[in-house]
Image (cartoon, rainbow, N blue to C red; front, side, top):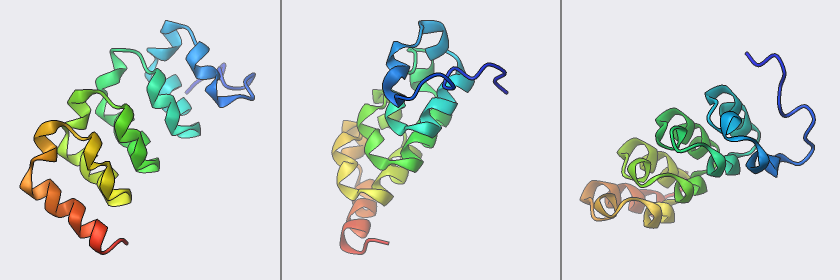
Length: 116
């Protein structure tokens, strides 16, 4: 748990981009930042950029975040399916391999034709 929450002094959620590299590389800090605003997935460090947990957290809250994930994560079937369930057209942000995947295309069509 964070004792000194770096968000306490920030009214503007987009201040995360001004965080030091150390804070943007801290899993707990970035987890909290993404919970506050999914757009903050853009500001994770390179090391956390391939963290599936943070990607799922962001995409579960807003499937449009698929666009901002690393290519590796945009090629993750589980993450892409979560995003497609909310916004079927985000398949365009999936990796080329998944864009051409028959199963993923059928999954997207299912939600285009019959949104939940």
